[in-house]
Length: 482
Ligand code: GLU
Image 1 (cartoon, protein in one colour):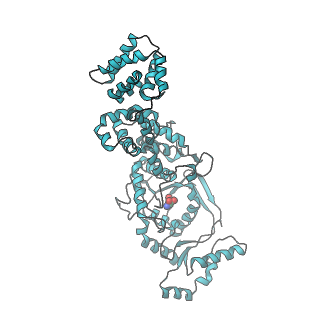
Image 2: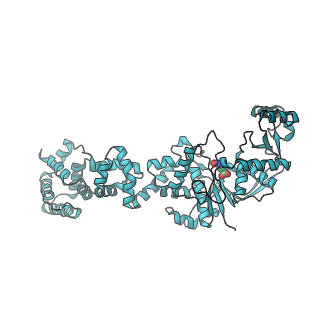
């Protein structure tokens, strides 16, 4: 294989759908695995739906995922420009070439007139497949003159050869496109902008793309693209069509199934490495069946032969589970940093409070992180260290009933006399009290937790005591004397 060159070619018309992100990831992994180039091309010829703001957001999201491109916007490269809106002259030139070669033709008609031709075809019982004869009245010298006097341009149609096409797809295997399934189609609009299929072929050829890895929703486009390659006598790249991602109910994954964009998941507090790990396993599997793996491991083991030809099911619970694993194993400094904006926006602590208590904050986050799957769940869990709990009379009474009043009184005094408020000293104090009083340990710990936090369960109790701080612990134990 020569040097691999692949591309991700998004249209900047919205958020990055998880399907698009998976396509980007597969291209990235394939390029890195084979020591090739990962090109980013912005397909922004739909001027009404594309915007610079959305493009910037898209690039930022790709970088957030860690999918750095080797050529493309922001960094340039030898095959630029990488934005289709900056390449329109190239498309025009190539479209004219096809016209000269008799493989495309100009039609001097408005979109409405073209629609009328389609309707006529349908009314006469034919499939809506255009051919040059259908446009005879719009290719006359008079029409041409009218257009040029008004300074308007014709539409350019590609003459679709009436034959079958074959494709050896790297994922789907042999595919045959039957003769006559489509008719002639537009490649250049009258405003000079190309249609996707045309721009895509010109660019993939011009950028020397060796492999096109994309969703199988593009298969019908591939037929058109193969015909265009043939018309230019260009060698097409190899194609690998990845099956769509389905929702658990078997339908196409869409907004009604909940979050579907990478940006939304990022907001919920999915870590980029968890997102990447999860996306990689949508349609691909590690040779040893490994589930949790780093980007490096994916690069080492990724290849198209392990991409399944059947559809992958998007199971968001698995994504959350995986994220929980990453949150637990992540470097604590980073998790604390990632947790900060969530804690601030929840109103639990201010930025200043976090910064001045950074050591404490890290320990508090560390104490609760194993109980969450999303960063956004952290503030709720951190509440026990910050907010004053509701300690009901019922709780106080039940402690008294269990004969623990005196025990906790002693514990309070022991805590008070600790010199350095540290986990070891706290453990020591608890141990001593438990030795002095022969109480049921389970009752002791359960009641202590309730009295200090108002909760039945939570992080490791001695750690909670330490993180609450002496002041809070003493005042809550004193409730028994009121
Ligand atoms: N702009 C197209 C899309 O976003 C690119 C498809 C392709 O990879 O050729 O679907």
